[in-house]
Length: 500
Image (tube, rainbow, N blue to C red; front, side, top):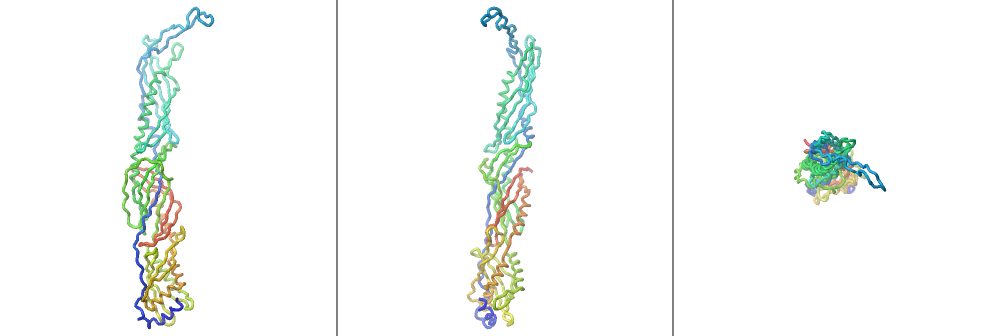
């Protein structure tokens, strides 16, 4: 203890100099371990949008303006007229005409066409609504020229509901339900009656509906959705520069899965919602190699809820910590250390040395020169200690405890005096306080850099937008580069398709 060893040792330093030949305790082994890559899994939402106006244009290109033409003979264009004029008995006609044909059936030739107006698109949820106005115009002429080129017009509405989906190969699909109704049946007035031509039109409409049902969903492939998804997938394999120096921090992104979440139709826009699951690896130091892209996987649905998880490590460089410690020790030297019985000691400290050593501990080398006031005796040497670095749960403040002096079996008298000084409770408390580090400022600075770096980050044909949430701190770890304090930040990430 200091009380029994310090002053006698200093007073006899010159006399006992030959009693030992060690002026430094043993230096602990140095570890050169690097920070481990911190891997997390994140799920980012990817909305891919298209204007309904563009889909409208596609539908108008897909559906011909003239739906069909008619050029055919009708054997009963004007049905025969019949009359009943008779004397009835017991409800039966006993004399006269009973439902007798008074005019023959009139055959005619019908020609004309059915054309459509502009296709209009709307919708809600995952269902597209198509409205196709139809106009019919027929000419009817009979061989006896009773019908002299009479023109019949009519109007109908075709309504289509397209339930949107996605095939496993990322081609959009649509399940179509079609119907139509005549607002105004095509016809002419002849001999006081209305003759309609809906029968001729109705024979054609089912074929048109079947054709639309086959072809319209396939036209969705013309939107190039699969190509956009494939390019976006390839863009996701990247390395992000989060912090350029002090220390360099990189995040390597490797997409793993891609999920189809559905469609949303609103405000004139149809949005395809995807979710990408990716691993994020955080590296401190040199830039890591780019991840190897993989082929676009099949469409999946069973992904976790969207959310961002990133590791944000902070490394307290040993050289920077040594400078901070040297400043604290300088103040301690001026202030002095009050030691019971012997008064205030003002040791002089040389440049300290810090590095990682075995057992998750920190090595501290202290060059010390101490004088005993009034007698002119001086002890000078280097004392090596190890300390345990730790932090409370979810705390950025790193404290040091369990300071132990390394061995020096053949230490000289002056070194033994310095060992006694370092082992004094007051000195141990002062050293622990000088070593304490608060990394909250470093973490806040790194978080700010991350916000800037990922606010609107271009990734090929994608743009990454990140919103950060809560941050949690892990357990500190002494490593070759410095004190490593892992942290994890959560938030949300959106990847917007924005082709260059």
